[in-house]
Amino acid sequence: MKDNNQAEMPWFQVLPKISFVSDDIVRTWTCKRDAVAWCWAHRPKRGMNEPDDQSMCARFVGMHAPHMSRCLNQRTKAPMDMQSQYVKLFEQYTGWRGISQFEMRDRGLTIMEEVIAQRAA
Image (cartoon, rainbow, N blue to C red):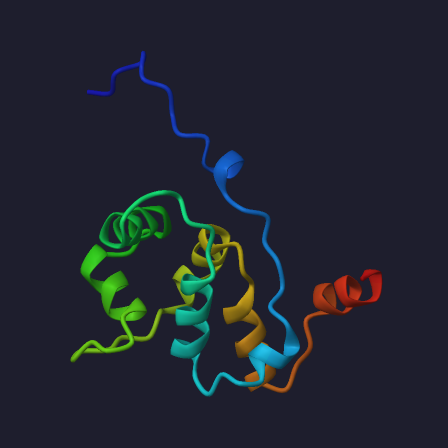
């Protein structure tokens, strides 16, 4: 039973504005895991320790927390690629659109929003 007196967390008010990663950085990535790790490493810190932040991110994107750890930890014995269904919310959580950028580059495509953002800058 839900307590109606408890306020819901205003997620979209506390999430960072989503930005594009520099093209020079995207070109250095060799796989999707590189993109995921970079976005995670460059997210705004929320004052939490790493396991707590991973757990909160996993909850936000709908992923099992140990799986999130396997996606983010570059030195794990059981690495796991982030499934496409989690990418959009993960990018919202970290504030970087890097995974989408990498996937588009990998397919030889361009994100029109990125082109517009580059022209505006």
